[in-house]
Length: 177
Image (cartoon, rainbow, N blue to C red; front, side, top):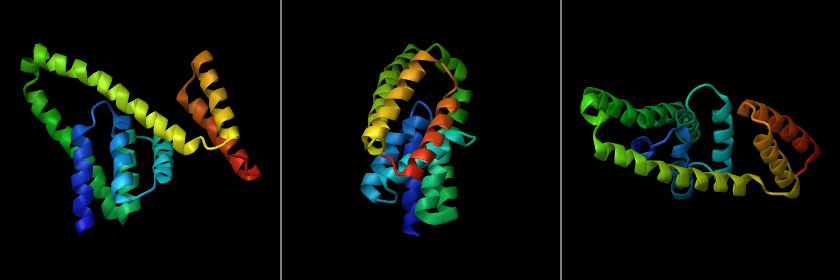
């Protein structure tokens, strides 16, 4: 029973303080992996990969997977509801006060200040994902090739995910790292 309360509180906190979309939840999720050991950083990387290619918001999908891996179906329902609830309540409140906030300079300044913080958090997450997943020479080479391709050819991210999945299957079959 205590695990459900912990899930509710942690994912409510994530929903309340992660500004900038689903990927902004990732530093909090890595923190949970370190503190509570509900899942490993490698499992979180797998959750992120699956959440990126499944329909729906990444943050909600990851919360669902994390809740399920921690406490089964009820855990996934609690984590998903808890991560959504703060946004739901805030949107209702803000929509009621929209006209007042629309031109408020202090609110605009706060949002302006949150943008660099969000970029910093996403950079930290990207470095953690890189560190956890690019573990060998083959993976580093493949990462460099895909990074170069993504700068030269502006394609849909699903294209690169598809290539990565195929190469990952081949690398797994031949046990390449």
